[in-house]
Length: 328
Image (cartoon, rainbow, N blue to C red; front, side, top):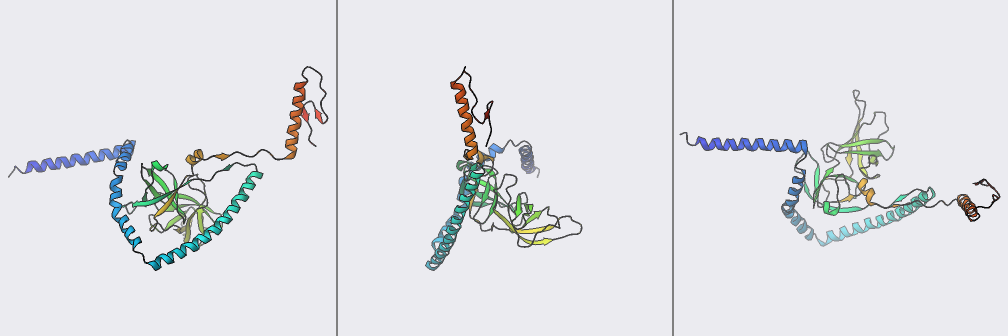
């Protein structure tokens, strides 16, 4: 009767040892970050497994796209043609604004940075944790992706990259509770912070006094403050405003402009200090003021005259007093 107890003790001992080792490894990883490299290589090695696990979903998308009826394709083509026409019109206006901006920079003698690069990416996985709003994109270090890289779409801001592997990267969505975005009200120019709530269709606009002019329907855009997110991308639209006598700030709820449940493609945006080292900056033009050029030429002629007649007495030219030039 006592013989079966020994294997049970051995099993319990192994289980307890495994639990202790697991807790020790987790503690070491959290405190010292020693396992970051190991995790990086492990996720890189397991990437084919992730791609294989997603293959049924990719195959089903491929099959469903092939089974679309002819009438649906015609309707979709007409819709895309109309959208393309409107976008071409907007691009023409944008080009005129860029030309005007370049002319103003030239007048102000201000350096003009070149356009930032963008990288196209596709969603391949979604974090299974219901309390974390994160996705996996099929772009990694091999494509130049870096941690903190902003991620956008055709509708607005999506989030930012929080971890990068060789072939893929994880993106923290703006609806995640750990994500905060500096924003500005497009109507009243109010600056605030947009924070995720964990809900896919709701974020909060924090630290806004009750007396501030904010209305339902106001749209908040990225303000560019902090140097993480580019300026001018839509973030959310105000859906409700609440007040409490015990709270100095208003409770403002907003809906993200990007439908994160249906997102499939994203753009990775080179923006922060990494992008500044990669971008070329156009140096400012030389001064174009006629008086400044004339004064510089006059001083240069005086210096050349003095150097050619070294050792002899040189009378100062007219309008010049001991090496100084008076401007008319």
